[in-house]
Structures are given as C-alpha cells and as structure tokens.
Amino acid sequence: MTEPTPVNMDKLVSLCQRRGFVFPSSEIYGGLSGCWDFGPLGVEMYRNVKEAWWRRIVRDRDDAVGLDSSILMNPKVWEASGHVTSFSDPLVECKVCHLRWKADDLKENRCPSCGGELTEERMFNTMFKTFVGPVEDATSVVYLRPETAQGMFVDFENILSTTRKRLPFGIAQQGKAFRNEITTGNFIFRSREFEIMEFEYFVKPGTDDKWFEYWVEERLNWYLKLGIRKEHLRLSPHPKEKLSHYSKATTDIQFLFPHGWGELEGIANRQAFDLTQHAKASGKVLEYFDDETKEHYVPFVIEPSVGAGRCFLALMCDAYREEPDKDETRVVLGLHPVIAPIKVAILPLSKKENLTALARKVYADVRPHFMTQYDETQSIGRRYRRQDEIGTPFCVTVDFDSLNDNMVTIRERDKMSQIRVPIATLAKTLTAKLAGEDMLVLPEGGRVVVAK
Ligand code: GAP
Image (cartoon, rainbow, N blue to C red; front, top):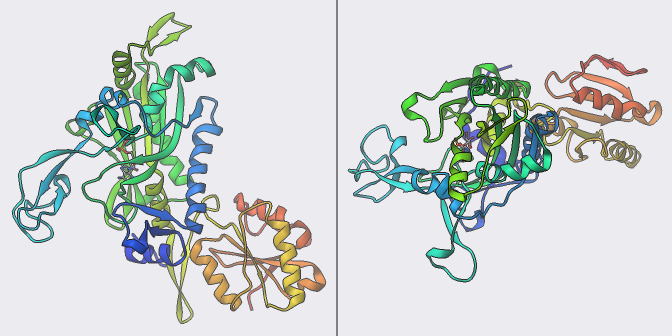
C-alpha cells in the first residue's frame, strides 16, 4: 500500500466533483467564491460526520444537552460578545491590481498576484450584515452569525432552568455560520458559508485548567477513533500574545492538509467572558447557584469548536490512497464505516433476470439496516473500483451459485478479502462487520473465499 502523505488536493477535488461529493455553489453561473454544495454522496458523508460528533458529544454523555438557536439574533448579542468591534482581519490592497488580501496570509509585503505595492493594513469586520423587515436602515441591521456559540450563551439561563443540569455540563450546537473571509481557498477549507459544531462546557472556576486538558485529549481521541492517522494530527497551543480577546488558553488540533498543517479544531478556555458580557449588556443575571458551597458564581467555559466541512475535508484527505493494481491504479477512500456515505453495495454478477431478481431481494433485505446502493452496470471489477473510490466498506456479490446455495460473497474494501455467507444472516453479519468485528469471524455456515 502506498502512503499518500498528504494527498494532492487537485486529485481530491476532482474525485469530489466527479463522484458527487462536493460541487462549487451555483456553478452554472460561474460559482460564488467560498460557497460549496454537498452532492448526493457528500451530503450523506457530511451528515455522518455531524451525527458522529453529536453522538459523541451529546447522546453518549450525561452532562450535555443540545440546542438549535436561530441564525439571526438581536444585534446587541454581537456588540456584547465583542464581535462588532473585534471580529476583524487585517486587510491590505494592491495599489496596482486592487486585489485585496488578508495580511496574515502574506509571506512578503508585495501583492502575491502581480507583485505590486500594498496599502497599509486596515481592519475589516468579517461579519455579514443584512436587514430585518422592510426598512433598510441602520436600525434594522442584523448579522448572519459567524459562530453558533453566542446562541448557547444567551440561552444559558433557559437551558439551566429547563434541564436543571448541575455543573459541569455543556450545551452543543451545530449549524450554519457565515464569515465574509477576505480570501477563501484550499477547496472547502476556508469558506464564507460553512457549518460549525460547537460545544460550550460550563465548569466551576478553578477547575477550568483541568477541564481544558480533558477536552483537548477527548477531542484528539475522537479523530483518532475515526481512523485519522496519528502522524497527520498535532496539537498547537496558541502563544499568549495570539490569544483571542476572550481566551485564557487555546489549543488547536491541526491536521496535515495538502496545503500544509492547518487548524482543524480549536479548544478555548473562554473563562466567564461571554456570560459576564451578556449579563452586563442585557441586565439579566447569568449565574449558577452551587448547592454544595451555597455560592453564586459565573461559570467558566471550555469550548471545542470545529467546522463540519473542515472535518469532512480532513477525513477525505486522510482516507484517500492510491494502490497499484495490475496495469491500473486502485483509488480507495479508506473511510471509517461510520463516516462512509454508502455502507454496503449489492452487486449482481450479471444482468441476467434471475440473478437481478435475487439481488434486488437481497437489496430490499439489507437496505432498512444501512445506507445501501444497488449497482448492476458494467463489469464486476469496475463496480468494485467504483465503490472503493467512494469508500464503501463492503460489496455483496450475488452470483449464479447464490441461486442454488442461497449464499452471497462479501468483499471487504481494504484487504479485498472475501467471505461467503448465507443470505439469511447477511444483515446480521454486515452489522457486526460495520461495527468493526474481525473480517474472519464467520457466521454459521459461512466460509472464506480463496482468491483464484
Ligand atoms: N466559537 C469559536 C470559533 O468560532 P474559530 O477558531 O473562529 O472559533 C472554529 O472557528 C472552527 O471553525 C475552526 O477551527 C474551523 O474548523 C472552522 N472554521 C472557521 N472559519 C472557517 C471558514 N471560513 N471556513 C470553514 N471552516 C471554518
């Protein structure tokens, strides 16, 4: 197996477009920079990413609840949070070609496009503005949220009183965020519209350092559990002078993207900053009463935050591999079964009526259990390759022997090993295999197929 470290981005973009994972938004009109559409396979995978995160953060924990707050919020939220004054990037403009650049991204003090001289830096607020109601004036300005975090802070009191959670506990949210990035690029890595998955974990002040460490480790482990290679991940603590206005400590989990190491997720100790700010600005009490110590205090917050699209991209990059295969190259997306868009493909060996009838019956049996695809076009070799390229963990082949012995062959994506199993136990066998049980564990009556 070759080790593509890291994969070439052009190849990945081409696969994404060709196989329906990701398309440029409004492509027939030339697209819109920084906006992307997830196609039929992409949307399945994207939902799996978000579902895996939600399961781990919310459903599998007793100390977490979910929220889905609105995108448009009272503009006072963004004044109190500091976004109106501080959510800005340094912008420079080329005096010759007038292209605009984010100063932080430039290696030299010259225009990367034409080499022209650049203007002085000025701060550019990256929040998108729009208007509510029919009058477009300063009093009706609202912002498209650039993060979901603030929704969780302003709903803190509602959630505390309705769930009666005790500290430490967290609120999780996934949803669209919008940033008018000065420059976009590296495919879906930096977009203007993206989905973010954020968790605000409220803790007693003084225990925050311990919980910060806990969440850095927990989040790193999540990526490892999803199969991302250890050597493609690293931790990058922010130096004190680079911390955001609200943060006492921030550590990024970085991934080795094709364009180099880049932030995948940030874990920040936001202290009591947000709740204190919103309490001041709204005049409401946003505190916690500790039954044990009989104290009132403002909890500290530890926040792991990751872009769903960026996570999708990292999983894709890490999974992509090319293997020599006779005269050709086998392209495989070695995605974790939880993430793979299609879990099982049902493939009749030929298009003969009696075979396709049985294959369709097998398809109907398996389909309620997992995302399954039926494919009877082209040679079986080509169909295997097509499934490998989209990361399908298992192909089930229905052949002429199946008509007599009621067995089918399960072919596994990574090792290409094959076993023959009774149709009656197929769904059960696939369930076990998708849950990670060893390929060589056979159901009763099954056997390993020896390659000819
Ligand atoms: N609430 C904290 C927060 O928003 P951030 O570091 O600005 O922190 C969190 O963003 C995560 O969101 C990043 O680690 C990244 O995964 C993702 N992200 C940020 N800007 C993005 C963009 N323009 N396009 C795609 N993902 C983005």
